Each structure stands twice: as C-alpha cells, then as structure tokens.
Image (tube, rainbow over all chains, first blue to last red; front, side, top):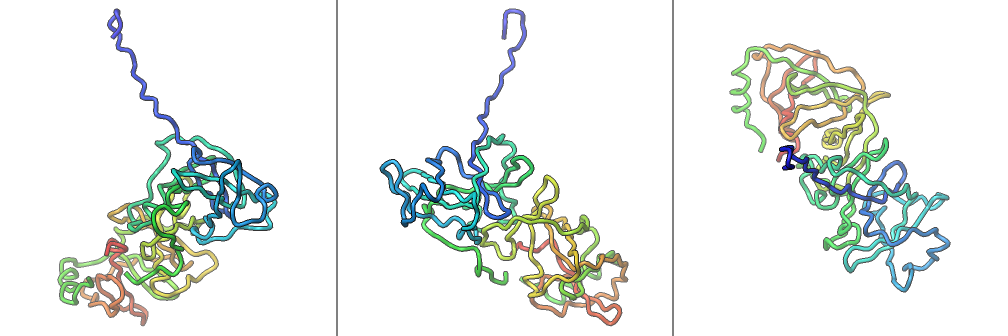
Length: 159
Length: 148
C-alpha cells in the first residue's frame, strides 16, 4: 500500500509457454521449445541413422509413426528437428517446421476427460496457434522415456 | 455391464411418452433421448489423437472448439452413409461428445412408453427398443458411452 492509501496492483506474471510448431500433413504438433537444439535440412542432416551435430549424436525418432502418420519425403519443406529432454536426444523428421510460438498458458487445454488411457500422458493437451489447433506433445513420450513405444492403430477392443 | 431386460422395463415404466431423436449409422436405425442430444451439425475436420481409449481417437474441430469423438460407427462395424455425414453432439456427463451419423437428417419422434420393449442387442448400452416402419430401433444410452 502506498502512502496515499492506494493499493498497488499485483500482477501475477505467468510466462507464456513457448513451442516449436511442426506439421505432418494437415496436423500440427507443438514441442516445448526449450528442448529444441536445432533445425536442419535433409542435406545438413546427412543420410545415416543418427544425426551428429556439434559433437552429439541424435538417434532417429519416428514421431510420425507414434502419431500413426508418415513423413512426406517429397516435401520440399521437410526438416529434421534436433530435440533433447534430460539425457535423451532425438532427430525428428517433420513435413514442415512452422516456427516458434508463444502461447498463453490459459489457452493450453488438457485432453477432454473422455480420453481415459495412456494418451493423457502422451499428449499434454491442445492449444490454438493462429487459426490452427495444435497437439502439445509430452517430450518424454516423443523421446521414448515413458518406457514404451506404441502405435495407435490396432489397439481397439470392444469396451 | 449391460442392463437386464427387467431393469430396462422398469426404466421404461417410469415414463409415459419418450421424446426421441431417430438417426442411423451405416443404415442401422438408432434412437436417443432428445434431452441427451445437444445438436446436429455437418461433420467437419478432425484431429487424430494417439489413444488407447476404445473408440475415442480424435477431436472434431468446431470453430474454436475441439469436441472429442466417440467412433460409434467403428464399434458397430459400420460405414457412415451419405455425401455429408452429420455430427450428433451428445450432452455427456464428461462434457460434450460428438458421434458421426449418416447424412440423413435425424427426425424427432414422440413415442408411447408402452411401445418400448427390451433391447435385442447385447453389444450396446441401450435403454430399450421399439419398432417403427418395420424396423427395429435401439434406444442408445448415450450418457454411458465410453464410461465402462
């Protein structure tokens, strides 16, 4: 409170969440930007199973497979995202890197409660970026740190 | 757990008339209590979600909102018919839920409770069934979709 009796407004500064937005076909995904170590063209990445960049090896991570889609190898915008989380590292091929985006955390929504399975730990939620809806992916799942790699297909069972 | 025929008859006996929305999925005639249906709209784009929840594997884009989709057609092993499938928005206890239905516009029907009998299907949660125009129509327990 100031001498004049006015209460100074307290602002709760909540940092927006920062993501790298990538595209597979018509779907958009968000990776936490703090884990992004680089974005390479396919020529820069070379053709081996690992991408070695600045002295560190980034094994190929099939994020497209995790999402039950494929990478469009003919895409002229194809990029390889070098991504790290903790001690895990991966090179993720995507159809296109859209760019970095800062999203108000209030605009990030968890999956609806109708989703009851492990997917709640794979997909942290959704957000609107521009006029696109993006899936916010858990970096631990992306890099296989959750102890499993499961494709979404053929998992149905009559409940 | 599927409700027994006796439970269904008890539920039916508590109402005199039922207001129903009648629709079809892959040509299979189905109905739902009108108060459980929040609206009907053209189907739109959807976002696939890697999911282990049976039949809940995508989000339907409706302007700024995303609606979870229950893939009832897959559960019925049916393919949606019509050039433009429709989206039935359900008032579900967990929040709005979309199901895809055939492109024929759903109809409203007020039915005497006495015409509702036990369900003939064992693979769906139902509230009962009735016959109209020579077709057997199951009344779905929409609020129980995906809750088992």
